[in-house]
Amino acid sequence: MVGVGVFMTTDRVTCLYAGPGVVISYAIAGLCALLSAFGYTEFTVHMLVSGEQKEDDGGQLQLHRVHRSHGRHRRFNQIDLVALAIILIITLIICYRTRERSIVNMILTALHILFIAFVILMGFWRGDWNNFTRLANPQISVYLTTVSSVSFVFGGFRGGKEGQKWVARVIGVGASLDTCGSQTIQEEVKLVGAWFSPYVHRVTWVLKLKGIQYEYVEEKINSKSSLLLDCNPVHKKVPVLLHHGKPIAESLFIIEYIDETWKQNPILPTDPYDRAMARFWAPYIDQMILEGSKRALYVEGEQLKKEIKKVSEAMEVLEGMLKGKKYFGGDRLGFLDIAFGWIAIWLEAIDQVAGFRFLDSNKYPLLHKWKNKFREIDVVKDSLFPMEKLVCFFKKYSQYSKLKLSEATK
Image 1 (cartoon, rainbow, N blue to C red):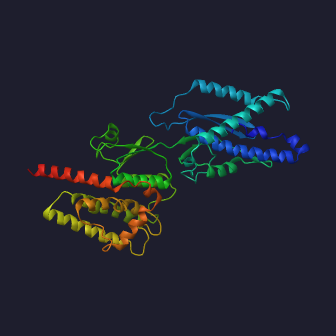
Image 2 (image 1 turned 90 degrees about the vertical axis):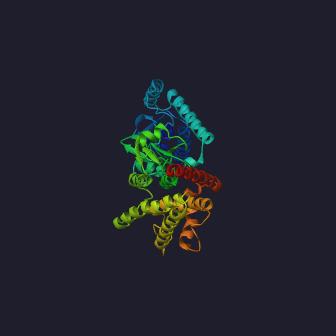
Image 3 (image 1 turned 180 degrees about the vertical axis):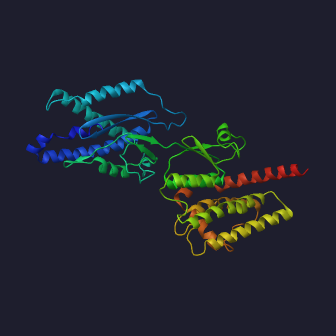
């Protein structure tokens, strides 16, 4: 970070005249570096094009141009010649070796202090505490390179790599970073979905549990966008996850991809057998309960009885799976909890429209208890919307499906 080196005294002065003033200057340097790092991170959150990064390693100054390619509507990957010229000029000024107590050094020191003050003020002015989250992948052992890199100097100790590891744990930006040398690549994650789809919501729960920043694109109910048709030409349905422009369809496959790509907060079981069983039960329950309960909204007579029986049998299976467990994943939230999570929300709305209860608390006490716990999870609670809205949607779905069924039987 430009400005940290301003507070460093030369080895000779430190050796001959070390005293309280030097120690205090180091303390001020550390505090200013920390504040400016917070401020600079916050400030660059609002800059869509680019930011600057400086690393100070053994007196060798390196100024890097960092392109940010996470714009919401277009990629900012063109070279800004004006900014590049300014960077080169600043680099020449910073690298210019000046003698102790020279006028040029005093001017540079004043400019550095003004720059740091500007960054801190802008950070507090434009700051958002929601940005101060953990790095999405805390296991990466790299320099902190969000757009700035900070070296701490305190009591003669240069923080270097270990110091920046500590900063990385404090100043997370909620986005995963892949690092190659001194360059950073911010993950591009986009989710195409619809508010009423339980398949979409299970993907958003996993993204939030993993701490992954993503852009959400809402699809209209009555029309499908060219983006959706291009990304999922086979099924033409949501959700679709785009990672660096590569589409992945089908919610359960998306969850597995996310879990294998971002290792923090694992979702799938680690045991091969448990993993295989989870992969078996998730689509089975989707077919038996989710699709079955939806069909119960528009079929009648013997077909309705068959659908109710299928749903009831599957609910009994889930009740048995919860015996002696807090969650389907055991003591912690797991893949099957995410896969079955729609039951805690959507099934209640379907019950109201259908006029009978699939999830009877007396018949399925363990499942009812799990439902209440699941709804209290933060990432789930944040995604809840008024039940009336969901009930209204399923009423329209029921009417539309009945009309289509009657037309098909004519």
